[in-house]
Length: 547
Image (tube, rainbow, N blue to C red; front, top):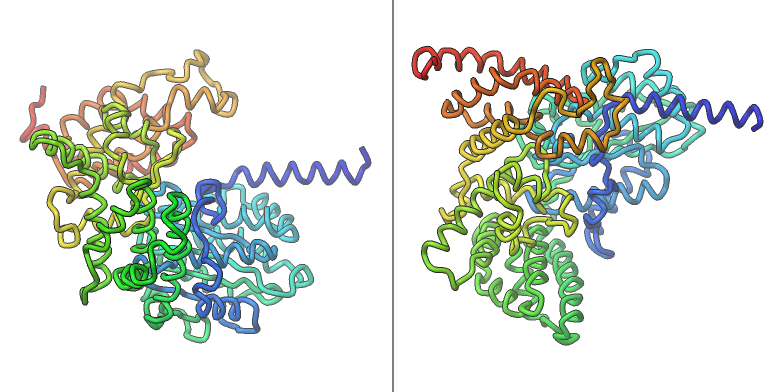
């Protein structure tokens, strides 16, 4: 091997080792494995808004942030994926981070800066050396503030480029910032993104999407007007939106018609117009209607008729979305059950869906069944008719996901979910999960759970497959998030259970967190528990049985 090749190999290995020390949110990029089936805009749709975005990204505009804001279901994430794909293909995408509430690492900001840095190092070769320098200089950078991480791992490396590597700006896509679960961190991220204006030789432009929620509006308005461009998606003319929704429905319903030989003209222009009217400008309504019809297979025509029964009215778009979610849920309950069977199925549905929508990180159907202490067929049967609103993979080891966060909002809001059979009490759902997590840990955790039988063995010396075998996903989930669920339940009903668990299994819990490399989360959880433990002890003294 030549000396140059040897030096290159050594350098690549050193970079890979340095990057491996940065916490990374695997599902953050737009083209992660988990996101590969998410749609981009169909040809000849969203033409005006995409043209405005591309003109901003490709032109001489000095504004470093383009904020696309819109109500739930207006198609923000689809546009974001389209933008990310375009610039990824042009080798101008610096990085992307798609937030998702309840998505684990992508539901918070803890790995935002480090994930951006890892993607920059992988996708922008000229910046690799400087990111390596930054990590080497501050080996503890991943434990520092978001501000320090951003400046050390992103701005500093980019500022070292001379501009010859790329004459056009690099693009950073940040989708659904409103899905980040800490409003304080949302404001910090906005402040950091605005610092892209400080780059001189190489420009970084940030394409940002979110709902127009208060923390984001305030954060944006604190950025000088000359440094950001805003586009309100739900203010686009209704005729333009209806045209795009019509193309979407026509394209996808044609596929259904071909699969079930319903005729080339199915469902017809009049039906298409009615569907577009029912959508009331919401792409998520159109997507949910399409999936509901498609999942009906040979009953596609019947399902189309069910949707059309609602009819268009002058009610708000959100009401139409509520109607279709309710229709999908009601359709999942068979008509041949007696009262006892119906109530049993509804109770199952509330328990499973309530858990799915408040999970802190997605789990597979198998893991959910083990966490809830029910059988997998019980979960499968409960969710069998809900493919229109849930992404239920054929691979039973892959996690269940919501097609759109608006379904979570619907279930947890009594005013939106008018049918009490499907309403989910959020605090009760958190209490259920907290109790299930504690019960699972109490029965699963033990000393030397990975059976190494040798004190001092490093985590890196043990195969990850062995750790996963001894600590399967549902047990890892319970170890990571039981405190979070307990806090969000705002309930004292589990205090006896918590007290007993801490007495019997505290060290086993910390050992398990060490094996999965999440000790830092355990420390934060313990800090969060301090106040709670005081309440528990008082509860034991004054209310509970001290024996």
